[in-house]
Length: 121
Image 1 (tube, one colour):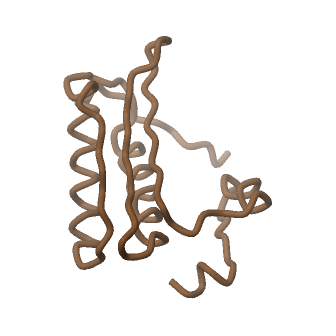
Image 2: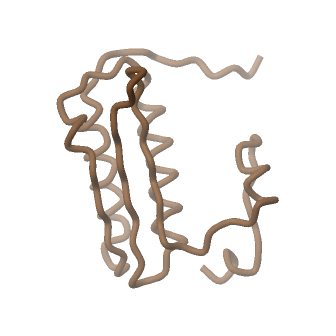
């Protein structure tokens, strides 16, 4: 049916975020982009989820943030616990951004955004 199956297990959420950030920093070490991280409040939180899928999502978000942020720009990763016991992870950057119409399609399967700005990178 094409449904994605998740392999739920308890894992250290802060450690997973840190490991993923380090992987992306290593990959883009020659690009002069600053990274700011704020996830100290969730360092010791155990999360019941699919760690591999979360790593994949974070890797995609961080890779795109670094890829589309010009040198001298910055990427910020922030993770916090919300009042309803969920965790919110935000990845923001000072990159080229997206047009409103592009944002409507990015979560469709196999969608990639092309425009003049992304083609330059």
